[in-house]
Amino acid sequence: MKELNSEYQLGEVIPNITLFLKRNVEKFHDKYVYQEKNSDGVYEGIKWEYFYDNIEKIAFNLKQSGFQKGEKMILFSRNRMEMLELELAIMAYGGVAVPIFAHFKQDTAELLINHSDATWMAVAGQAQMDNIGGELNQLKSIFHFDKVSDSRYNNLVPFSELQKNIPQGETSCLDETIAPDTVCLNMYTSGTMGTPKCVQLMHKNILSQQAALDKVWEVNENDRLLAYLPWHHSFGGIFELFTALYNGATYYLESSYGRDVDSIFENWKLVRPTVFFSVPKVYQSLYEKTLASKEAEDIFFNSGLKFIFTAAAALPEKLSLEFQKRDITVLEGWGLTETSPCSTLTDPNLKRISGVVGKPIPGVSIRISDDEEIQVKGPNIMSEYYQNDEANEGAFTEDGWFRTGDVGAITETGLKLISRKDRIFKLSNGEKVVPTDLEKVIELKCHYVQHVIISGSGEDHPVALIFPNQKMLEKPDYQMSPEDGCFCPRSLNELGKCLQGCLHDANCDIKQKFSKIKSAAIINSELSLDDNTLTPSMKVAPKNVLEKYKAHLINMYGENVPTEEEVYVVELDVKNNIARKIVQD
Image (tube, rainbow, N blue to C red; front, side, top):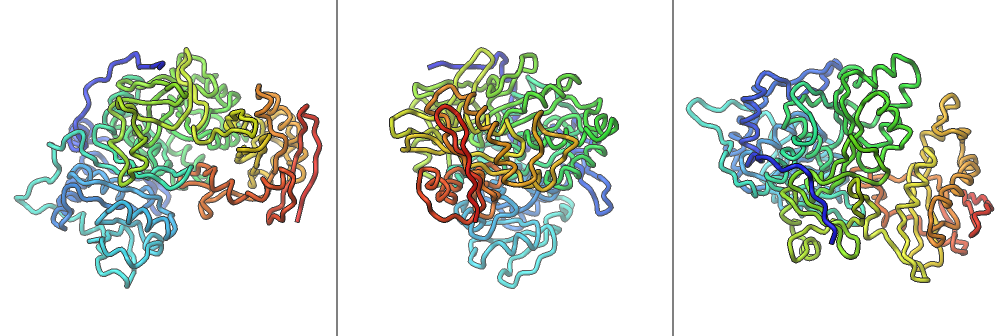
């Protein structure tokens, strides 16, 4: 098997979260660790000295409440300072933090709470209380950051009880002796291909990652991160958050939680971030704001911006060049929750190649199995999945490598991602199709396309389900076209006509004739968290999408069954001559 390793050696790894916090308060005691907006819209924050003191108080009062080492606490909240202090206190005391998505509906929230075996919970406020039932009798206490009211529970405790001063003569409960391989964080995966899995992460997983990154990039106490990525997800809650904490950089919470580009841009103006972690669609939206004026351009591409990090998909080359011509480094990486999460990082000195996500970080090794699966080994790998024998059975190879489920290849410039293993399907003639190849091409061809799913298992050719960007259709910008030649469609019919050429070109970009689509249904519908077609981290859940929109697939293969959604179907023959038809209810 081919194997890839870092050219750098992993340095000393801090053994546990407690010693990490102790090191930081000594090193950065008068530096701001965290800032968020107050009720007047002004950023205000806390310095390491007081931050550490708060964590000690919370850990002490947790112990007084009966919380024991090894016990688990669900954190059912949006990003906020109380959640951060509580999570670190739990881990530094010897417990296990279990963050879950703040907007889970009752069925999903209770599923994860019960599966986790957590005996304690903290909620942000009433919205979270309303999304749990009255049968969670295993919970000893439910701490709440904001005021709540719920007659079903008599164990509601205001968070202020955990913020009380430590009595004179008592000592800190933060444990400096916790072993590096002690589990401290249980994080649920996105569940893109089914039920979320509970990943058990150890102190050494989180801290070895930061020791590794410290060798390959420069982040320090003078840096400012404007951040919105949710802490229940590994990209935000481990990779980004601990990058700021470990290096003494100030973490500024983005007040719209990444949902409003105008808010992000306004906060960008206030914070002037030096480092930013996000996904391509957000970068694209922010860049479009810079076209309004020279002032807006100067604000976004501020002189202090050292690098941006992109994940989930490659940054479009056109946008990447905008950063590079201003000497702002663009970094990309790859990993999974099970790998804490970063396993690879691109080299800023090499030309970026679409699909190539770089070389392993120090201490991590990557290899490609005989069936092209990417396998990883290193101190960043989880212990195992919690209460999931089926998943654990196939998680590791006999010689101890983690099976990622991703298919890839090793190239001269690093690891190249191809697809998720479970997304690859066979046609009726036995030919193997990698749907993500064409999905990426189509999404890059048109910014009016929000999501694409290619299907065709057992059929004689593939087809596509395409979901448009509804906001762009509603408010087309004729002064600023996302791509040359785009006439800014205003409706599904206009988008369908516009996409005909793009689909033709996308098919031409795919070498294998059998992998080209013969038809595409452009569906006037949005994927969402409510129907589980999107995960809490806003990734597409392919199985759920294909099931919900099954009727459209059946129709593209020659049937005529009724559908609820308005749809525009583009048909292409094997020579890519375009025919078209409109189907509407």
